[in-house]
Each structure stands twice: as structure tokens, then as C-alpha cells.
Image (cartoon, rainbow, N blue to C red; front, side, top):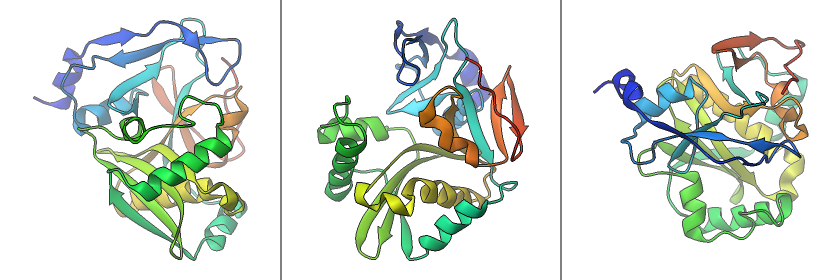
Length: 247
């Protein structure tokens, strides 16, 4: 069965409204694929082009009745050009080694994840996770997922979780050593992932959603050109072009 045929047979379900994590005072509704339906990377790759994301084994996208603030975002890696700040980050991290690993539980990764969550998201739902919840959040039984280690000499600086789609890489989550934040490990991991997509002959890096009204998402606008899924069509925004702020 082809991915297109499988998409036509998928059932979708809407969640109940619940508080939005990005825009205070608003509720969000997510559209999920049938969790009992067969899933593989070919089908998920097609869904990514319609703005869907993976969280664990669940495939979703926001579908809020009165809000369209969450816009799917991707970077066309062959067109991307690093700006001055990004070039400085690359130069500052020339001594950092990237090591792709299969998606699997690792005590060192988990300890770093817990330090990161305690520092950046204290009191959140994953501030004190157990190993099973941690792995369920980042991986799934059907996905082709990499846990990319970034090591400063022997020290683990960051881990970037990437899905390998047929047309690109999809950034699932990145966590890093809080005391090494001055090295911009988040930015460095994005830049590395774009280079890795090029090395694999893939066209895009998917970066989740652009939410113009959310300060948490502001960092994403530095990667240009970028593409947003607007009114069912991917539209490109060059450096200096204003991004949609509506919602």
C-alpha cells in the first residue's frame, strides 16, 4: 500500500480543548491520527508536509477553531545562508563533535535531560520524568529517529533528537547542559542538522511551528529563508521579510 493510499484511509480525531502552552488565556485543540492505525516513516513523511508533528508515537497538529497562530515551519537547506551570529556559533563550537546514535535509553542522556528540564522548565509535566516517560516522549517503535550527541571533548554538551523523513530531517527536541548555554547549543544543533540534511541529499529541516505572538518561538525567525504552511501552501520568507503575527 502506498503512502498516498494510506493517507486516504487514515482517520483523524480532535482532542478536547485544553490550555495552550504558548499563548496564555487561550485553549488549544489538536488533531490526531488514529493511534491504532498502522504508521511508518513513509506515511509520516507525507503527513509532515501537511503540518503534522510527532510526539512519541502520536501524530498531531493544532486545529484550534478560532485560532490559526501555529504555522508549520521548515528550512530549505540548500537555500539557507548563515548570518554573522550563526557563523560565530559555528566557529565557537569547532571543538564540538557530533555523534549520531540510534534512539535508545542512555543513562548519560537521561541525566542531562533531567538537568535541562529542572533548569529550563521547572515544575513542568516532564520536570521529573522516569526513564519510560522520557523515552516514550522522544521516540516510537515505528520512527527512524536519531539521538545526536554533541560532545565538548569527552563532556556531553547536548542531545538533539531528529526524525529522518523521506524529504528531510525533523527536529523533535533538543536538550543541553544549562551551564554551557553561552555556547548556543540549540542554535548549533539546528545548524548541524541543516548540514546533515544536505549531506544526506534531503531538502528540508522541519522545525515545528512558528507562533508569532509567542516569545518562545522568536528564535526560529533567524533561519532564512524559511517556509511556512499558509492556507494549504508552503510560502517562502527571505531574510528581512516580516513573518505573520496573526493568530
